[in-house]
Amino acid sequence: MTGSDTGGDPILFYFDFSSPFAYLAAHKINDVAKLYGREVDWRPTLLGAVFKMNGNKPLMDQPLKGAYARRDLDRCARMFGVPMQFPDSFPFLSVAAARAVWWLKSKDEALAQKVALALFNAAFQEKKAINSAEAVIEIAAANGVDPEELKAALNDPAVKEKLKTEVDASIEAGVCGAPYFIVDGEPFWGADRIDHIERWLSTGGW
Amino acid sequence: MTGSDTGGDPILFYFDFSSPFAYLAAHKINDVAKLYGREVDWRPTLLGAVFKMNGNKPLMDQPLKGAYARRDLDRCARMFGVPMQFPDSFPFLSVAAARAVWWLKSKDEALAQKVALALFNAAFQEKKAINSAEAVIEIAAANGVDPEELKAALNDPAVKEKLKTEVDASIEAGVCGAPYFIVDGEPFWGADRIDHIERWLSTGGW
Image 1 (cartoon, rainbow over the protein chains, first blue to last red):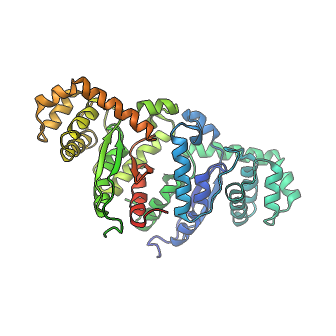
Image 2 (image 1 turned 180 degrees about the vertical axis):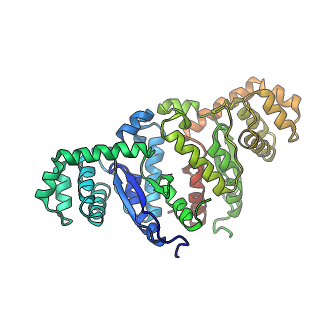
Image 3 (image 1 turned 90 degrees about the vertical axis):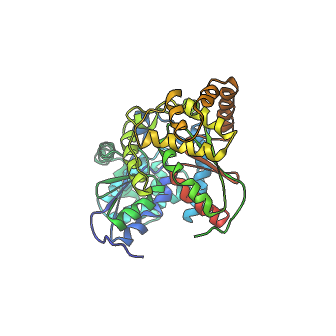
């Protein structure tokens, strides 16, 4: 299948590394974008501030909803054909992972995406903790990133500031959960909206 | 298209009349079920208790999420091809509507569904208030229900008790939002899961 809409602005893909549905989406969105000649701009953010604004408890901690969400998640993973093991510790801190990816993006978007996917896979396939700088550096190094340079970057006030700026910008852009996508100005929230995005790209919207 | 799975237990369709996504689902689920030789059992409930358990504010009142949800809702309505006008007063009380439908179900499931759809349409197509017994009686009467009998039923302690029992039973069954479906024991939450239900029915699950 090829899209009727080829070329155009990148699809903005906002995510928190701690979101299992974002993990699923990370395995799908580039393939869908490619069908329509689109790139994807991977933009890690931190959702803690948004959850606080909305007064939400983490989904998995909510009575009834938590149990359902786990079941739905596993079923969606099987439907997507993406292997998944739920982390033992959840939710987890994703600040170091997000900083690392923003630093890598400033050098090489493809490498940033490769490392981001490796971080997601470590958390949601291999049940590895990715909450510490050490864990993030180890995973990045295994994907070709210089560990000393990354270690320095994670301590660089400019890199810390960059993430803060991007978190604020994501809130400004309306990002209310993860995964969150913006396609030609149109927002889509949820791994279950990737089908809608594909339809949007193929029809030019409705 | 015809399903590989024909016959079998009815699909349980739980909803609160105040849910706009349940309104959309109400226009879709019977058609999907029919493809697989299934009936649908429409089961109105009240979600106030569940929202309280989960500490959720109504979706539309949440910063960021509310604005997104309205946009997503309108886009889903257009995608489903279902006309929609958002009520001026929202969320609204749905106790009388739910009682009326449970009373009708005890007499005639088809009539109960016809009236339920008329109530949904009044609220989400015609912007009519359906929160009062009077409004519910008027809409039911226009669909062939004896208004005096319904008026008596809405005041009948047994009918009130029936709804309470069913709300408790829905929580017991795990219903955490609307629309919520149970297909052969498998739960699905959200109008956006009707596609998954269709796939579930056509494949026998995954």
